[in-house]
Length: 152
Image (cartoon, rainbow, N blue to C red; front, side):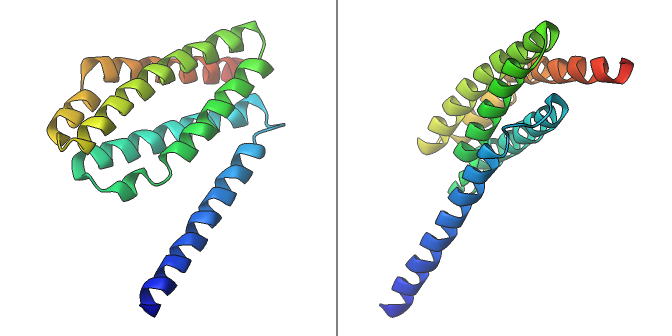
């Protein structure tokens, strides 16, 4: 009994630490440059894609441990980038926001299917043309943003 209690306390501490780190990460976005926000957006997109893909293939809940926190950070970074850019930047980050919304919707569908025991169907969603097109739109938006700063 004592070992179970000890393990539960350790897991609670780890959970609280993860929440504190992500809360700090979200707060630390304020004041970042557009280039820094773009880097965060790029990294969180990659993290989210890897997490949901690993979850769809394995069904292991641990894959999704940081998904919601990463999604919150990504959304805040996109919002700040839209608010902080010029009209061209706003249009680019709006495109990224729309692609992200489409990806999040498809990822939610995939997660629901995994929970129903339909991993193969979940993987098909994540490998679908609609998902891949949204990923491409997302990437094109970031490429457009980066090209602007390479030529300036």
